[in-house]
Amino acid sequence: MNTPVHPDVKVGHIHLKVADIDRAIDFYSGILGFEVQTRFGKQAAFLSAGGYHHHIGLNTWESRNGTPAPRGHTGLFHTAFLYPDRAALGDALRRLVEAGVEIDGAADHGVSEAIYLRDPDDNGVELYRDRPEKDWPRLPDGSLAMYNAPLDLQALLSEAPAR
Image 1 (tube, rainbow, N blue to C red):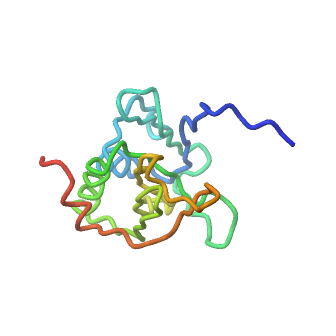
Image 2: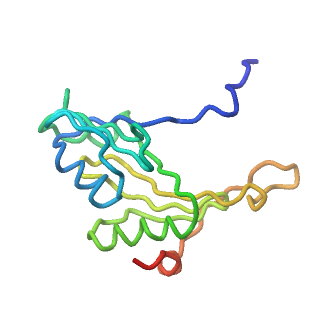
């Protein structure tokens, strides 16, 4: 049996190949609100939450003016951005609604609540918040009992902080 990875290991950032840097920045910064930390012309940009060096890397090194990967092929299913609480996730939903971004779906998984959409390059994006671990649904043996139930988007919107 392999030894598990250290429990404090986290996913530090994503780096996406995009067709158009400005379009990608408009989405990840202009709509979702990540801040541009640095930019290299039309080739790359690094964005973050809270001033970190980068949570999102965007580049056109191999993909400028490219097309999305076809469905049914291997590759990235989605990136997932963890919001600190329900109010912050509600704010993210409000940003999407105000920008007219189409939402692919939304789900309550018991352990988390999630909104699913696609970025301008057709990459899957999940915006979610975790419930406290003490509230996660469990089976009698203690294992997780995740599920896939509808998420009430209107109720989530009502928890977004006032602007």
